[in-house]
Length: 119
Image (cartoon, rainbow, N blue to C red; front, side, top):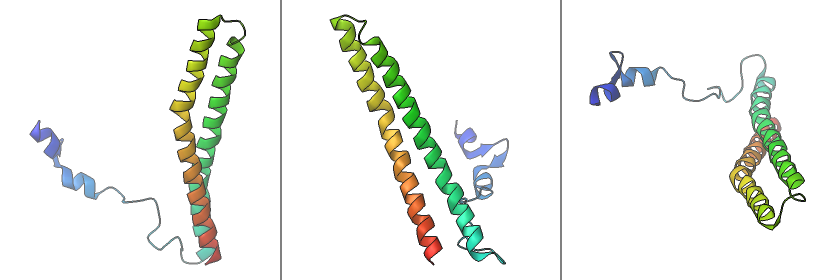
């Protein structure tokens, strides 16, 4: 087990790790030669699109699941209604934190983009 952790296919782990890029951000602070503001704005705009897309997909999924469960509510008996409501609660407990995290990431990316454009 130790040999697998120390090396992959005979290559030391540190060599593999050093070849990986550290982050997706440009080293020049988002400013490339010739286009200082546009390059940074485009990079920050693409960083904003991912969390916004994730937020809208998660929101649509939550609404779809809740609407599907709510459609089953009138036709069920008392115990069935309780299980449908428990299912609705589980949908919210499971997916809502991820949606809120995506909203927070989108807000942070929006604030970063606004701060970069002000500079």
